[in-house]
Amino acid sequence: MSEINNENESTPLAVDPIVESPVVEEAVVEAPVVEAPVVETVEEAPVVEVAPEVEPEAPKQEVVERPVYGAREEVQGVGVTAGGAIGTTVSAPAPRKTFAQKDKPKEEKIALYSTKNVTWAEVGKVYRGYNIVPVSAADKWLTRDHVRVATPEEVAKEFGK
Image 1 (cartoon, rainbow, N blue to C red):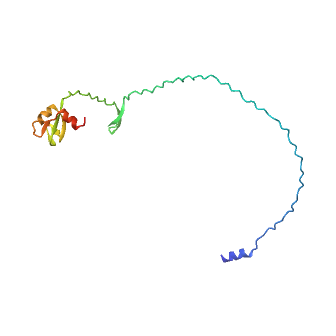
Image 2 (image 1 turned 90 degrees about the vertical axis):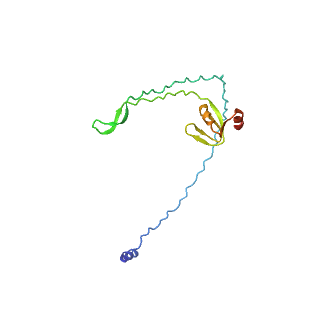
Image 3 (image 1 turned 135 degrees about the vertical axis):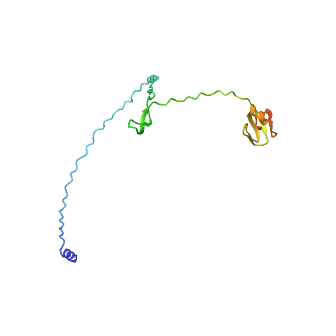
């Protein structure tokens, strides 16, 4: 490598001489300036006519109906395929179950006052304070010494009415 560097160092670089061309000035000829005649333009104000106001008619609204889709007569489900394997098949949809609401006769209720929290398996629960219970359960609760009938006045006083 040292030989290559030595060879590059010994070779002189070629430098192009810069030749300058002489600058020649051109004569400038001045032309007389002629002013253009001034033309006055008169602008006329546009005439604005006020038309009587007319209420636009309300656009007629087109009624767009939604498409009606019929119930699917067949639905996909899991079942036995033609080859005997378990896979997806098409079957009739299951009928919808409708639950009829049973009209329960409203049982009369009564207010009781209890001094303890007690749970009775056949009757229910009462908590310390005022309780609203059905009359059938109240008959059983009144057999206990910690439960008494509460008057409407004391219940109203307790609940701020």
